[in-house]
Image 1 (tube, one colour):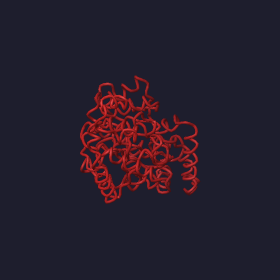
Image 2 (tube, rainbow, N blue to C red):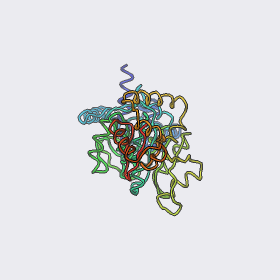
Image 3 (cartoon, rainbow, N blue to C red):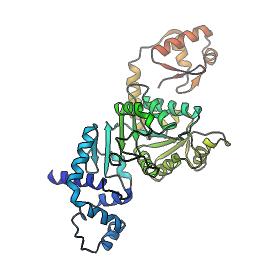
Image 4 (cartoon, one colour):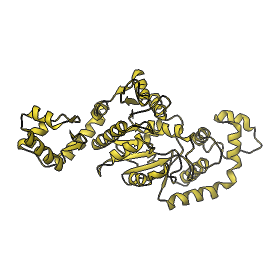
Length: 373
């Protein structure tokens, strides 16, 4: 127990060592405590080669040793002050999926509770158009309604829309992976979103408290998004979009990648279309993702949806006929339902209102209607 706590403190300390690249931090963390008591008079060059880190990074870490107690105590106090917890590679509640990474982060700062449900990541452009935002919100909402955790990066555009969609119902869960310290709100206008996420899931970061959102941090952050999810959906993204980095990382980890196809001359569709050309799965509806998941995961989701549906009042008469005529997950207009069901349009409209009020369907702009899963 004492040894475990000592090693935990060493990981917290190493994670806060100044000016050491993340890759070296992860490599050194993976080999604690073998090097921590090295004498500076040793041939550090050969030891650095053995550890797989530059000699200058090992030297910085060793120079930082006298501050271990002070640095760790301060970091733990700061985390506690903002209501954040610190997970280390040594802890049982460290996310198991991250251990698939060749260099998993030694430390995770967490605000909220990390959902234990299976997860799907939704990523895309910060400059998404209205259609992209609508699609991201739709997929976030419906996947969360199925019992999946929606993972994203809390950025502007697609990320924020996916998080918001997932949280439309109180039972929806979402996880935001940050490219800055857990105590830093970025973008600044996402304070409300941040608070909502921590109450319906969690925010996590591998970066020490107070770390600014430097551009170089986001590709590092993206590997966590890819690892935490069973699959990654790319909604919109230009040729050099960071979401494509996440998708490639997911492929490297053996995870599924999904993409929303778009018009070939649309700049925001270049990323998803390229992924589809390279083997990504086409996602036209949320169920395309659900049906591609492992059968064991699908069984868990089906059982959860069935229990949820059992709590809704049964529908009979015209409303039941309209519900029966609605394809699961697809958007449909009232006149289409009138034609399919054989009912008069006024009966259909009245039934749609009843179904919406009882939680069986959702109304979309147009208007169009969608059966809830």
